[in-house]
Image (tube, rainbow, N blue to C red; front, top):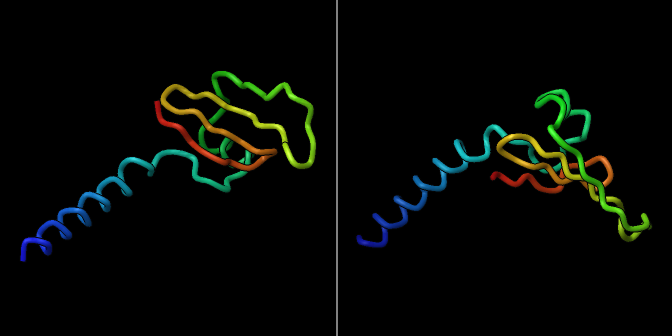
Length: 82
């Protein structure tokens, strides 16, 4: 009985955070053009300075006010909320 209450509390918490915490940010797999169309121009842009190779592609970071978006080539890898 006790495990059931704990399990239902965990499910409610997961549903809450899944719906609110990540709803307004770029998701993995979006393109640069899609992010630009939905969120506008970034405040700043940084690119990796190392030589670009097939195994190590260029990483680009777009910084917005409350989050940063990390791209590999032209695809979103991660979104970090500040």
